[in-house]
Length: 183
Image 1 (cartoon, rainbow, N blue to C red):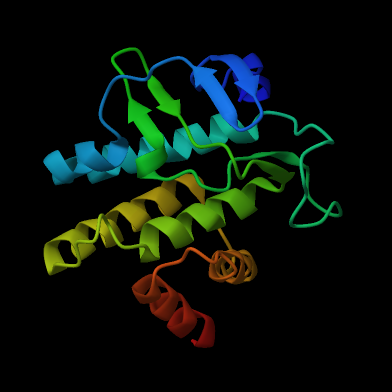
Image 2: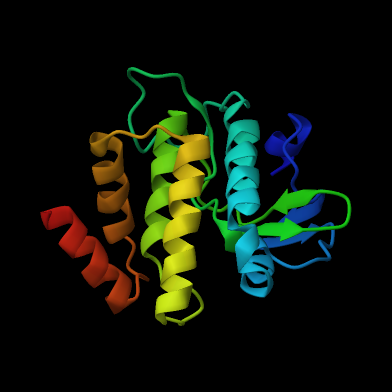
């Protein structure tokens, strides 16, 4: 977070780190997901904001000490969040803040966009599975990809595979991703 903040990424300021404990700036405001729940018709604006936040993160050179889960060859190695979705963006009065950096890595920007596509497009939204929520989720996902993409099938498949490796994945999401992997 300190590296990201030093390069202009909107993250809470870190004051102290001791082992697993971190003391940082308080971020007051709703998450982007909460804001979408309150005003679903803002999905295009919120999707564009999420795409812009990706661009800000990906403009940061990645330090060598971060893991490179997609390998070091080929594309430029930039800072990746790997969990940048509406629940990890706090909409404060001053600006949005990106939280939950525990999966930060380095790699090509397209890998981060693909991972967000998988999370946003196939995760359960706070346990709600009604058709209206799924429709807004699909519209948000398409709007995000239109603003942040393009992402080819190979990167989408890589993101699905990485997400399926998560031992904390809930069974309904796992089933949706398994069906996607087969298709």
